[in-house]
Length: 386
Ligand code: ADP
Image 1 (cartoon, helix red, strand yellow):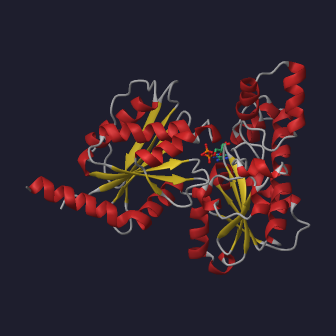
Image 2 (cartoon, rainbow, N blue to C red):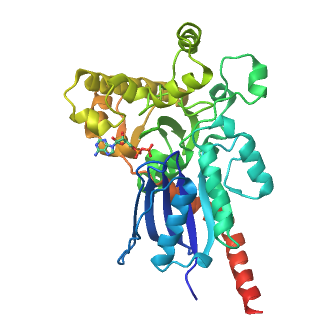
Image 3 (tube, rainbow, N blue to C red):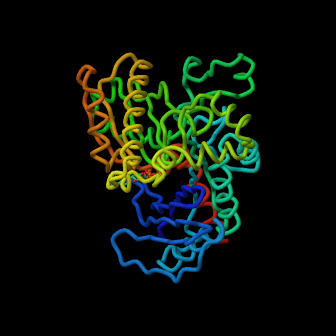
């Protein structure tokens, strides 16, 4: 019988990562790639696992639809027929207060996810547009959403409330936490490779362009540095991280910033980019001799270390610290500077574990929905035979 696939899409504001897995028990990786700089000087890099890959000529991607069209054409060109894609699993940043596990995407669940777009305006629209595009392009596909917030869905009230009047919490103004697909993956890897540590108190540092920390106890998320939106906690590539709300009011009142200006300032112009005036990229900053580049790195390291201790307080200690994502996995200088600031703490284990959000998405959909996906693909098979 022909091989069937599950396609994982992780769509960001100007990029879309994909992974194609075989619909089998161990979900073999068949192809992977990235469409980048959508709306700009677009690029598409992809490869198949274990066989020759054939590229297609590239037209600039004006929109996510162009990028996904190209991806689908690339799949067909590399002998992955579209009708064999039986399921798609999407990274969706915000599941609101409703989803604590992957969800089947139908009209009703999609309506809900559209209704909370304002909670993750930089990400959610792109996540959802990819669902619509695949619905139109791949016949009979079943689609699922996996949420960055879901892994944190059981945080207790101490870790979800802001110190605002209680009615704000009732209206959904709460700390949800993000990067949950990455933390879920790390928790599963810990269980496999460090089973004793996995039962203990672990702080995970997901340090990429977006950055946050998660406090795990026995593999469960207890606290995270991210809040209602993905701008809280650590300073990031272009985001402020936690900031005195009064400072923002001051900027609005006295520097004539509108709400949109503030949005742009805290999400796109700040963090490492704002502090250095050079780049959001840690690699570039690490190689720079400029004082502002050094300052940006020192600042980032300080905040990571400070917040690690805050996470340790949330779980009453720290048996282990895990670094992951672009900076966490690759920037040894940053890891060492953070560890230096934590030398005063009681001894703890430290590991680097590569994250794999796309496999985490595929596995969680497979775990929850394998029967539905297989039934539907068999049913279609039978219908076709009639
Ligand atoms: P995203 O949040 O966009 O998925 P990534 O997890 O890919 O981000 O991380 C991007 C960050 O990782 C960038 O700041 C980049 O500089 C950093 N990074 C990647 N490789 C290296 C490296 N070899 N040395 C230092 N920093 C690196």
